Image 1 (cartoon, rainbow, N blue to C red):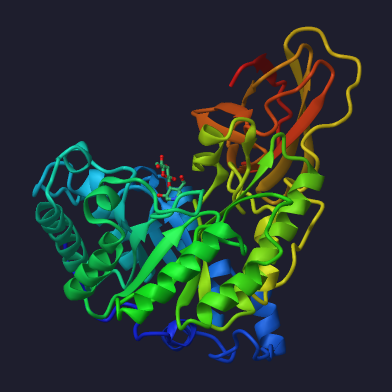
Image 2: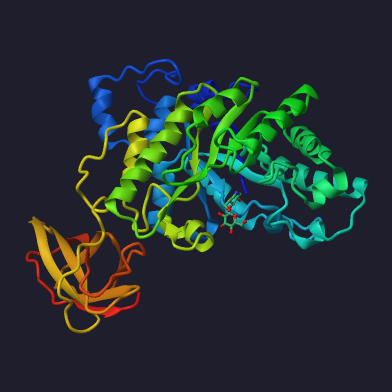
Length: 487
Ligand code: 9MR
């Protein structure tokens, strides 16, 4: 792959937010408008702020607003467009992990990692490197290699120097060591800790620093967002590393949180690590809710996101936030936590949720322009008399203009459903361009809409609706859709 020099880089020890501000400022807002300093927004800026993406706003304020990306999704245009327009920083969700890039000793495979770095380059985005030394997603040749101390150091050095060296022009910040402390606040049992003791952490940072002395190097973990025994253990660990002169620049609070349970001490916790001279980043933010997502739960989640991002933005030295995925459709959460999901600011159908608008506002943008729009509505209505059959779909044209129209389809369950599919035929010259609260695809004139996950489970008589915008060639037809159980 071609590497270009001069990408937007975050450089210089303890200069996190300010360095970012200087390199990223594009608009008329003050470069150092972060932390305690106030932001002056002109009328012109305010107009722009309404249409601004999270990326525009974060750029203006010199903050990182990132997302995790999977290379397997980049060929989907809506996914790629959202990743490029809403975020100024990209993290490999899985494609840069040890098992992927060095599955056999000394045999490196960069195909998927490169695709993401290339994507970021094409879109002028930073890359936060995740991750070099982690007990998980580690190939068995490392975990079961029975290496001596010196052999394991050699294995680590090869992996770190090759990976960091390869991307030294592209990746300016790294999660060097991920999750070395367990939930009991003790060092986690891993091949690295068993073989090298806690020194493996210092060694890993020194190796990364040798491979790219300009890179900013982070330690990263979950459940350290608030002040608790585990974050206390990190506080002691990083103080010790700094005292030894280990080249550590920052700490990542992953931020895998539960809605309604954001730790109240998060800002104080960020501040105490910044006071040690470290940069703090929220590196993997998602805030999960118990499904189904109702309007009330989505509003609570918005307040949770607001609390986390404001805690970061309030502290100079907290350089920004990375959310752990572009869309709820591909979030790791539902696969790991049964019955929970909808953890990201953008939903399965790429609709901006209240959480998105909460971040938008926290970044100085406008609030949700139409808070009554889906998907802020409660996705389910109270039960009525159930129709016969699996379900019924009622199609209504809600708006019409020159060559466009908007339609709403209400699905009512005849029997209890765990998913639904609605199909209909388009009239001549019609197409569907943009949908919410359902996954909609078309093939020729046949359109298929399936539930969006969070609105798939309906009891008999319960309704939910989805909508879309379409184009027409002169007149709008009113089709008779068919509804079936299953998606
Ligand atoms: O989101 C990642 C998921 O796709 C993987 O299956 C999982 C495997 O461990 O890793 C997830 O990402 C993790 C990240 O690398 C480290 N912090 C916790 C994240 C969520 O598990």
